[in-house]
Length: 344
Ligand SMILES: *Cc1c(COP(=O)(O)O)cnc(C)c1O
Ligand code: SF4
Image (cartoon, rainbow, N blue to C red; front, side):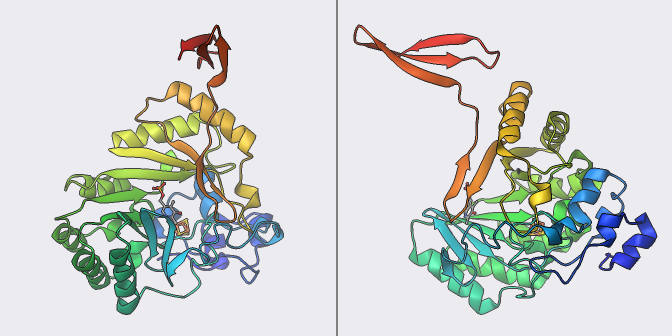
């Protein structure tokens, strides 16, 4: 049974003062919901920090509720069309467990519920009418909280109205509720696999989340030809150290998941205690890049406030351009800190 009350949680793990003092009625807070799979992992401090709320959520009043201004970039009620060639469709506001760092908290868990058939049709029709859109992210909330029937309708509507659009299946359920991926659900996904590719987009933030069951759930997709990519969030006290991130990347690759993004935590109200400052983030990025293969290295990325969009954060190795006798040269620092000059 999933946990929804502090009192139940207290019985299982005993709560700290900060956890007890969390006010579920506070503004901009997310409901408490922890799935069985995660309850079993709460002895790992990095997991507890991601799922057990604390009073710091109530105390942070600085951030804003919707830094991405997703509202402003809405194509339809649930379709965010911020980049010309791709759009995000919010299939539902529900998740199997709520992450305390969720940047969609204005939307997530606040009972707007699953998209209706009409909303799905409107979104697919918008996508069809905007032929510049090549990819649709089926996101949320978590897509897989929808029933099998609902998922089947969703896929069939998108596949019939805009069949040549790539679908990204965005989910944290492989980590937090791996038993969701039953034969019948996988059968439905296979049915709509013809045509444009589908990609599985996971969120694993810590190596402990890659349990055997989670890895098996991802394998169900990869085995049928749906490649898997991971988007993690850089979180203070969870994964803001090189060793953890390197172990996470190694485990992801062994599970045939490509580390794709490492997100800077968005300045959303209620999450300040989980954010890492960008200076430290850049240092981590540099250090792990030195240790990881290109395959294992995620792109450290910030989503700029005011709907500015995503930008890659990286240490720059190109220091300057010099011109001598009409010939240009670029001066670089190597990852080992030496200098090299590169002819134009
Ligand atoms: C992140 C995001 C995408 C996907 O961006 P990629 O860089 O292609 O992964 C699309 N739409 C919205 C609104 C997003 O926030
Ligand atoms: S799974 Fe995603 S949408 Fe749901 S609470 Fe976590 S971060 Fe937010």
